[in-house]
Amino acid sequence: MMENWKIYKSFNKLNGIIAGSTTKNVEKNYSYSLAVHTGEKVDLIELNRKNFSEKFPENYKFITFLQIHSDIVIDVSDFNFYTNWYRGSIEADGMVTNKKEVVLCSLTADCLALLAFDPIAEIIGVAHAGWRGTQKNIAKNLIKKMQKLGAKIENIKVALSPSIKSCCYEVGEEVAKNFTQFSEALVKTGEKKWHLDISIVNKLQLMDLNIKEENIEVSTICTSCQNSDYFSYRKECGCTGRFINFIAMRKQD
Ligand SMILES: [Zn+2]
Image (cartoon, rainbow, N blue to C red; front, side):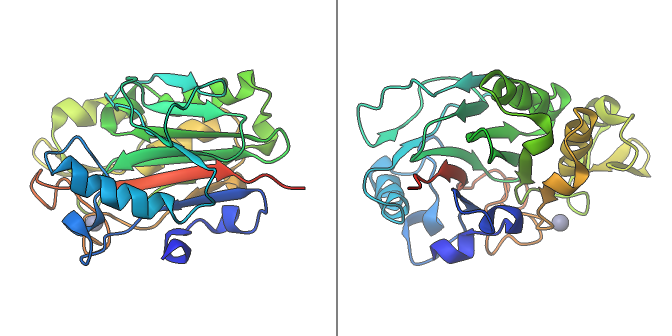
């Protein structure tokens, strides 16, 4: 199953990194939702998390945070893990680390996750970007935080996860007005109706920081269109689980 999750071609060819996005599994509790904040029985979700963590070598640590649609990115390099899973009472929407064998996890259902890696400086980062985080340009904070640890713009590779795409993401004026400068990402479809693609906005924001276009991989998957494999908040009318977008560095000898 782990192999099905490794959807990011640009990371798969690199030795030092494990990255991917989980998919639904109807044979598991709540179709393999991995979120403990969406109202399901936590002990059953914990079984899914246990199953997820068992795909990795035994000593790996896992970290999630309480995502609040902010632009806060924290450095968790010196983080103390008291258990195998840090379950996230920290409010933030991004994390970076220079530690190996730490799995940074972002839970989504339609929102975008950014997975970033500098293979030379050996720094990774993850961020959660819905329209609010995108409007606040969390991509910029993620990259800045990685640079603070020693990452170099020219070496950073970013993968943008499956997310709801413009085919399915209709927004009103209050959302659309924040993205009028991104004409490639915003299509007017009617009186006060637009369709928005936040993955395109994030890609443009990354390119504004001089991240090379060939170093940005954008998943073509729309979570709403491909709802059989991915949770979609919109498609499932708000009653839905979350999948995990993850990235970790391996120790190499
Ligand atoms: Zn779609």
